Length: 186
Length: 420
Image (cartoon, rainbow over all chains, first blue to last red; front, side, top):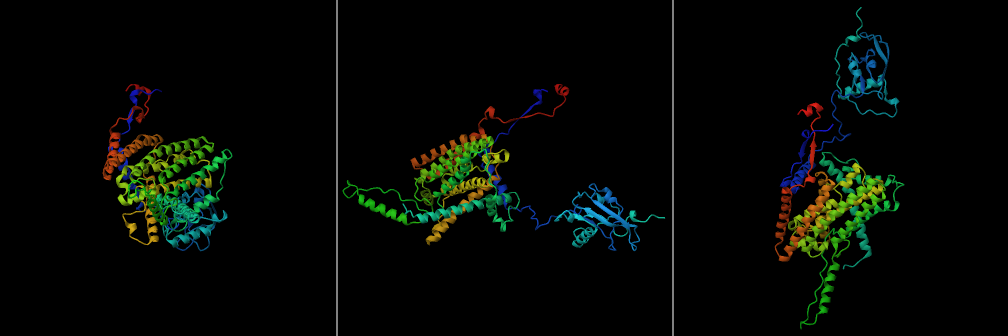
């Protein structure tokens, strides 16, 4: 489609003045900026001496929370396993031990494949009893794939480690578990 | 001439080359660190304290990496190019004074005897022997003392250095390498003209091209920076172009863009090109500090110690300090000024710097001929610079040079546009 002459606008480059043609004043200006930055503070964070400051809702390694009586909070309702887009959570439910009267089920095994996980946080959002949370631990390493498949004991140990370190405070509601865990009223 | 002692000279050469190569290695580290500080970063600091062993790690990497020779290159020139680049850069160090020097004695004029007719040769010979003996006994802080063509030797080697670039681009059998090397060689040979002409003004005043004589003149009369600031500016700009440093960075930036003459080069050969470039930077930093900033003299400070060894060390330290200052300026300017386009680069050389250097040379000749004060030359230099700026500010740009940019508004449907 031909363009009409009236549509086109011609733009001229701005004409350089006397000081700009001399070029040196601008170079001096530039040098002031450059040399000023040499003596300023650097913004680099020297990892690993300086760890980054992570926001509290950072999505890192999962943990299984415990309640006040040091029991695992999870009631094996399979909400997280269903919500997980990567299908990395594997739960085997079992009847709760005799002394645990406020719940019917508990997870006999709870395995998360941390290598499959995409750290989206859907499991944390799905859990009705605030049992699974993503912590701020980011430097996850292992010598084999098997090492990075976390089972229940490992996940609970992450809980113990992070609460002791104080980096991830317990955000769950204290007190009773949520409504999904209560036995149906008969 | 001072006595030529093979062993002493060999030791001095070996020492100087070793020192310059170490400075080159640490110049790469300085470049990375200073660049980092300018960009609010930290730079290499893991290898050794403050990253001081980083050049060793880089050198080790270059040595241990596989050094491939592609099958399609012209093997002789391919291997010759980096070797030539580095060897020529090192050869230029032979005349650069790195410590205290005294100028060689001037030729002795034969005088007449009592009767005024017969020349008195024996007295002249005696004076010659005495002066030469005195010169021979002095320590000269330069590898090749008394070389009267001092500066011309350096410029000749600078011209030879283009061979490294041209051979590298040609032997690579790669059209982008060839074009890159041609551009680089055009840049270097264009900037050699103002490089040489800006120095001729200095040579006229000092009366000799010998670098030691130039330093001696400056010690007596004052630095050439004060009398010929325009020559210093022209020299500095030309030397930046000769070393392919920003803002005249096109041959090197082509590595980022397309290829350039370094495309086909691997580890150690690439390293040798880089070493050659940094050696050029060091040699030209030395030259700038010697020819315009007084060399090893610092307003009489170097005379305050009578012990000869301390004096030599002090003079070397002063000159080294000035040289390091110029090296730092190379690095800081690189991160301050944007790159010139190739046509702007060539236009700057041929249309601005060559006329300026010619007129400056004319002014220097007038000042010498008519015996005006040296400060007159300072005034004329600054006046020339300002005059060129005024001419450039007020002249009309030719129509085909006008950078006009077409701005088309958003495309409306045809029916609406034609109704406007």
